[in-house]
Amino acid sequence: MNSRNLFPIVSLVLLITTLVFAFLYFTHPEPSPTQISVPVTRTTSTSSTSNSQPPPPPQNLGEAQQRLLELENEKRETTLLLERLSAELKLTQESKTILDQLLLGRRVLRDFEKRFVSQPFFQQQGGFLQYFRAQTQRYLSQQEIVIDGGKLEAQELKTFKQDLATWVITLSDEEIRGVARYTAFFFAESLYAIPMNLLASRLVPDLASMDFNAEIQVQGKSKIATRNTYGELDENGRVELKRYNPAQQFFFRRGPKVTDRVILFLQSYLSYSDF
Image (cartoon, rainbow, N blue to C red; front, side, top):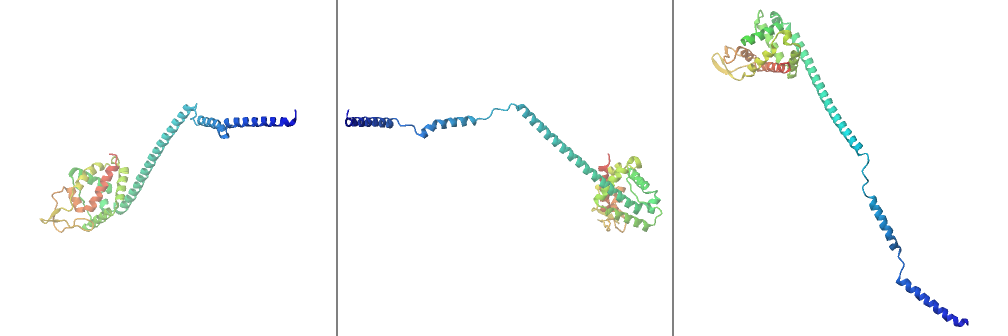
């Protein structure tokens, strides 16, 4: 066959083939890369979702609970220990306060001893303790408190009373309480046979009921009592105090300053004693 006759036939076949392939290409396009990756993306998402689920419970849950209980017990023990330490510290502080009061009371009583115990007034009475015991018995039996100067001259007795009153009223509340603490601790009733608790329980109400601003009878006339710088009664003339018993009359003459110191001492003694 002549090649010139074949060329149109081959060209026609190629053209038809090209048209067929073009038709197939446009009617069934190939999937794009985005479309191909969709299934992969969905698979990965599913895998992530499965990984985000909570892990299974631990196998040793009982051990964890036991550890929590142990920690709770340790916390309670620590709290109890702190409370006990706090109480011990409080007791220690109270013990130190008591010791300080005892030392202060001892110092004040030593000062009293140096100033007054060796004075002729107490020496004539057989000593301070003997005199104090006798006055206590007299008050409990007769409600009387009397200062008997004995052989002392009037001016000497007056000076002694003024010095003693001045010393008493200059004591601070802390010093008075210290003396009461020291007295309650060392001068027990069984040792010196002085019923201090009975004296204090009876004398304090008597002294607390007194009114130092009330009118009194001086030479038959009513007036407010005149007092000196120490608080003692300072009247010229006969003074009548019929509204008070003899012990109250004694302290009314001594005045409110001395009486307040005595009340504080007796009240503190009662609070510090064992009864």
